[in-house]
Length: 262
Image (cartoon, rainbow, N blue to C red; front, side, top):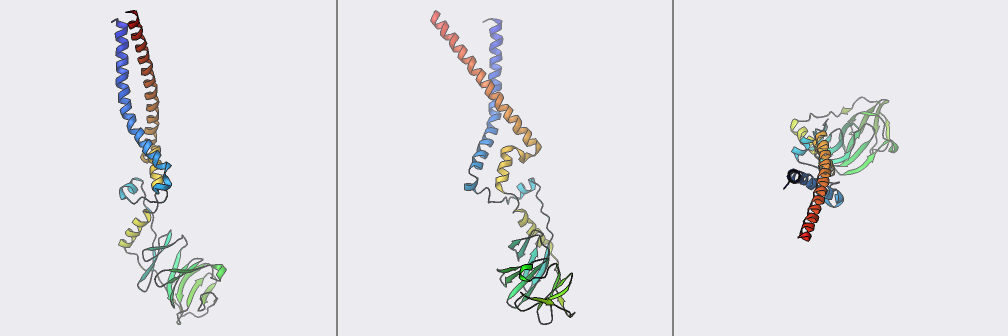
């Protein structure tokens, strides 16, 4: 064996070794891309676009810390809560809204929940009966909520006091000063923590996690660079594999020629 052929054989052997090493590393990323790609192709069947992440460690990884600005009013044994993003009856979601909560009072068989420019009528079990707005005669820009000595609903607006009739559909100027204004209750830390956990468990969908895993963005900028390097790795693996295949074909042809001359 000549010196040139020994040197050439050593290079090919080294290339085989590097090809195997690159193949092992590339296999990890191929598996990640393949599994995440299959999941994304079946997003609807898997419910990735409907189901939210509830695992604390994953939400912590994404740095999800929702701001909870609680406003709480008690009506009898029930609690009306505004989180800044939604309105709750006790711990049950009523409606999504960022409109400030003004107050809540019981009037007859219903609970009147007032926000800045709208109101809800609820049963005593928290079922939504009707949503009122300016089109239904509700005063605009409500600032405070209370009741008169007869239990009629009274609101303070920028233009003065307004009182509702028994149907809560007609409002009239109210000049008396005898109003029992409702005041918000203090939100205890346990309630705040519980609602904060519920709120952040309704932010991140699994579809986004799988997309970030597929692109590498789940690791931030580093992850994107890693996935780019992985793509380059696959290119090198393909090129080296093709080169090794060509060298193998050449060796086969040389071996065939030698057998023919013997």
